Image (tube, rainbow, N blue to C red):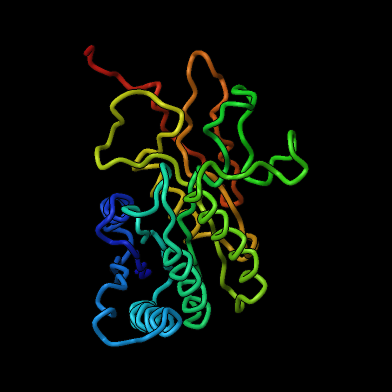
Length: 260
């Protein structure tokens, strides 16, 4: 049985993946430590504090990654940084620790949880009947559209860092950055929406990545969103194309909802 490590183990997405894949994989979890515990240790500069934090995170990741077949990085300080606002630079520091440790420990599959907010999907200034591609969309801007928030900028940095580290992978290693949509604790959304990612689809994409063959690319960015097609929009908002043969199965508009 393959071993899978989930960071941010107490979060919604990690619990969904554990529920859906717990019988197929040996799943372990890790909570990313906060810096608060280092403040009382007498370090005099921000640089000393940051170095100590990176060392602590890397040490915990190294111990947890030993012998695993996949690391799934979901840990994120969403209290201070989320799609609505804020910025926590430690989120970026942790991303770099995950990449470095996973490569050093020769973890075959490195899954990084990006977000649909890495693309400015909230402004509405695009054709709602043409699915947004996961690669840079240059239809309106030669550089591709920016992110929807500083949270999205951090997630975009995660993707760019993945492209950088892909050139430093060891044989057999692969990186996948998934722009996750809305994954809730409940199996069903409260109402149909184009951002929803079902439990089955969320876990199914991870499984397809873990089981992908040697011919899959060393690095890829894909959307992790269900196939949400409505009577008004015959195409989903996000193009689910990926190199692993995975196709989302669920559609929030096909579910029955009670009248309020």
